[in-house]
Length: 102
Image (tube, rainbow, N blue to C red; front, side, top):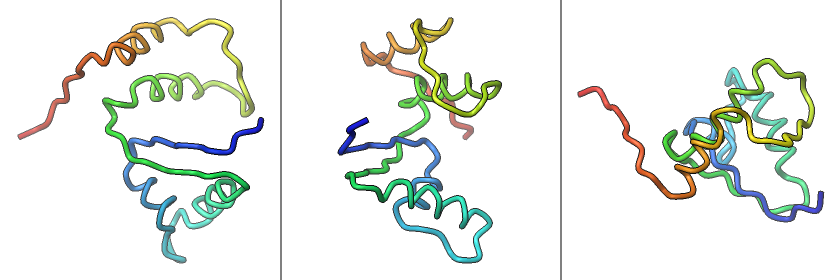
């Protein structure tokens, strides 16, 4: 596809740490982390950043659509139902509330 730079934003901080710093050899997910890191070490510049879930609602929404899909590349001709609301709030930078148990 010709990409030379890739920025990955993930709301799972432990995953960001795995990808940026590796995992211990006896960790449960060492094989998975190694496969991902190998894929990211191609001839491109990759940054993996942590973002809070509220900053990743569009990505979370799209990811939730994949639960019943087969593996592979899926091209969406039209936005899925409900997607436009999340995209619009992202574009206008509408604040999202976060509930924290005190």
